[in-house]
Image 1 (cartoon, rainbow, N blue to C red):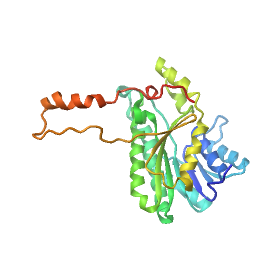
Image 2 (image 1 turned 30 degrees about the horizontal axis):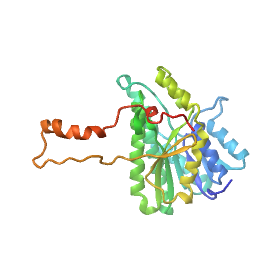
Image 3 (image 1 turned 60 degrees about the vertical axis):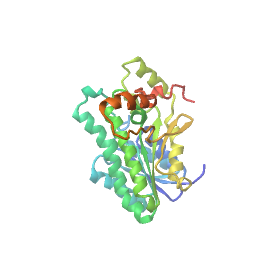
Image 4 (image 1 turned 120 degrees about the vertical axis):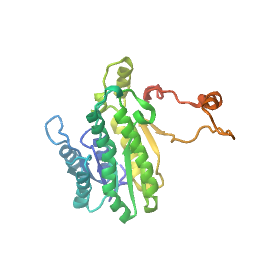
Amino acid sequence: MDRRMEGKVVIVTGAGAGIGRDFARAFAAHGAKVVVNDLAKNAEGRLAADAVVEQIRDEGGEAVAAVESVAEWDSAQRIVQAALDSFGRVDCVVNNAGVTRDRFFFNMSIDEWKTVVDVHLNGSFYVARAAAPHFKSQAGGSYIHMTSTSGLIGNLGQGNYAAAKMGVVGLSKSIAMDMAKFNVRSNCIAPWAWTAMTANIPADSPEAIARIEKLKKMESHKIAPLAVYLASDAGSKVSGQIFGVRANEIYLFSQPRILRSLHRGEGWTPQTIEEHAIPAMEPSFFANVPSMAVTPWDPI
């Protein structure tokens, strides 16, 4: 295995299981020193972060645990400080920590909304912001944020999650623009994978059951190679992009751009919009369909 991450320090949030654990192990295997962040305990009752650190060390890598919440400013600062205290620098932040509280919008509680937004969106900002001064002073760094097709395309019962994940896309784009002059890049990955978090998807409809069966075929470790590439020096020219990984496929997502333009010299009225603008634009409308409808083929 190549050592393209040799000498670099990577923070992976939510790294106690699933995609985050795979990221942490892959970065370590490619030579990085890794800060494993997670609050949870594993099935054996151990802190999940400690278990992953032990696994990385057993595999010959270097890692430390940071048992802190991403959803608070002060604790996010401590996550970054753990990298500085243990390894003297930080080169990459992978904002992977996440939770779900799935509920149809008309039944969603304030707590269900806030919990998901606090972890995914606020947490991504807090940890990224904590690392920003260090990236700026060393004139280099990489952010990798996890987004989701629940926001990019849409899914039922995930208004909180979809909104947070689309917020992450906007955050990543702004970071990429604001920090380009400091040689700092920022990208998003939308993962397709069966993990403990996706296992919480309610199997309450034929569509949901079909979605779950397909997700079970998608192995989380197959997402890690793209993250390692984006964090490495080889990925230094890639910034502001949205990627997806689905089994052995890598996708590049489009970003919102103007599709159609209509001009009326005397301006528009509701009637002329009804008669001219909407009929002209309607062929370019996007259907309101869940993400599985956009990727109907079996994972390959």
